[in-house]
Image (cartoon, rainbow, N blue to C red; front, side, top):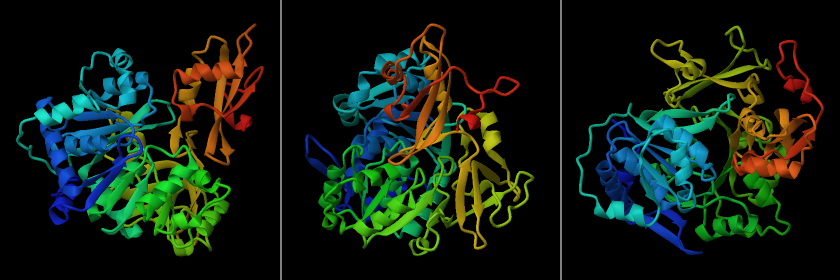
Amino acid sequence: MFLVDRYLTRAAERSPDRVALSVPGAGAERRHVRYAELEGLVERAADAFSALGLRRGDRLLAASDNSLELVVSAFGAMRAGGCFSLLHPATKGRKIGEIVARCTPKVLVLGDRQAALEPEIRGAAHGADPRTLVLGASFEEALAGASPAPRPSRIDLDLAAIFWTSGSTGVPKGVMLAHQNMKSTTVSIATYLENRADDVILSALPLSFGYGWFQVTASMRMGACVALERGFQMAYPLIEAIARERATGLPGVPTLFSLLLSLRELDTTMLESLRYWTVAGAAMAPAQVRRMREVAPKAQPFVMYGLTECTRVTYLPPGDLEDRPLSCGLGMPNQDAWVEREDGAPAAPGEVGELIIRGANVMRGYWQDPEGTARALRPGRVPGEVELRSGDLFKADGEGYLYFVARKDDVIKSGGQKVSPREIEAALLEHPGIAECAVIPVEDAMLGQAAKAFLVPKADATLDEKEVKRHLQKLLEDYMIPKQWAIVESLPKSENGKILKRELK
């Protein structure tokens, strides 16, 4: 039997005094939490959550910036027999409430910034009534006042986490991962990255992002350290953090590396501790990869591809980067991935088709969405297995190296976030002056992709870009706001009235 929180327990038994987490503290201070201390906090959190009614199979939902308490909440929920679900810290109150209504958590954990949204959250929760803990006083009181609770019987097929991702419909999908799924992903990633106990992984990625969360599990598996940051809005603090923590690993999205490389005078000695860096979440331009290799010549670069439904699919071995700069690599260990034509036959080398994934890392399905699950997961060729349709178009060369071509749907990957055009369109259509709209992806040097909005004004209405942006900022996260705009008289349509986005592109 394997359970994800056992990584922490084993590391605490082996190396109780080793630093597990470096986290933001008060002001500019950092807090260094050792494995024994972290294990104790998780035990108390499990007791506290049990006292609040969380039982085997129940959910804990949390919305907060990266913090010690967020890690403790996730591991504490699993230890109590439930599962955790983390939301991006920029998530609006209405969307948090809608997700509360869908997954009916027993416990809701909110950061300081998110606590002010609680009335809006409950207004959109449609009667769901979780017990709310706010990071700070109420969270600490809950942990301090909890009595020891018996641990439930658990197996590795139990649900460990739900990660939320926007699909082509614009409705967030809850990707269900069991302990078994998370173990497979963790072991595979740590294997090809060759993680070890003396690693310090600097992660500015939100823990709500699977890419960010698995930095924690991969580190704890080896008894290493994760240094959490609260984002990467500015370049120099990121460089300072790498040097301060003596980071050996740097996971990022293209936006993070663009920001880093934007410094006019980059002191490359501050990057000398890096042993490797990884990029996923969106395609990184070969020119950026080359520049990163110049400024961090001692670090091995890993270009990767993944999706929330299985976390990671491919990685490009650093030694192959020169010969295949446009490839996203080979399937990772303990997984099969291949390109398939529309008729189900394997695609020939160079032929474009959909990428299909088979492995223990593939999700259990979408939370309370049997139709969506049936579209994404199909019966496998081996009896009792399932295979994941990625929804992305790929091609492979004669040696099996994979190349991303395009997305079958219109989801935009912007700065490592999946952005649904339909969700933006729905928010735009709440504006009183907009009659029709369409949102498409456009290339962006910093974000990889950005959203461009085409707006058709209502009769006698005058649209102002700044005013429309203010309208969207009330409804959407900042990373979803379009960067480009066009006001047009009409949108191209098919005979049945469907907007032809391909003509807008």
